[in-house]
Amino acid sequence: MADVRTYSIIYVVLLVLGTAKFVFFELDQVFTEQMAITGTVILAVIKSLLIAGYYQHLREEPRSITYMMIVAVFMVFLLTVAAGYSIQ
Image (cartoon, rainbow, N blue to C red; front, side, top):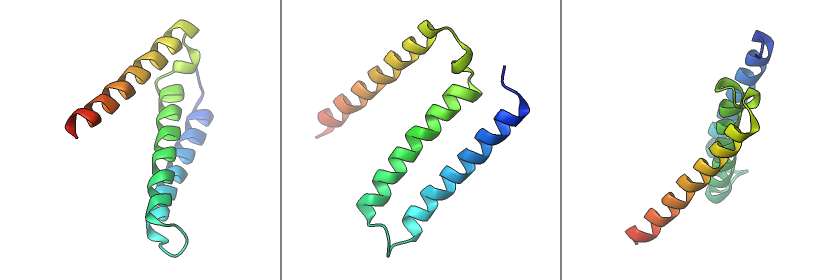
């Protein structure tokens, strides 16, 4: 199990990533809206992987559980894409 130091480091990284998402939209001179949205989506994926890996302890689970979670996330992605197409 991870120790307090690891949790603290991950927490600080999550805070920095959350602040970076805010900065993307506040620096209009540097980032276009498309760049800000793309950066926000990438940082959101990184944050969700950190949360799932460390706070939900997927790093310590057997590999079969990890693979099952990857398949589940992929299926949710497919359902989201399919729903997006059905709305149009």
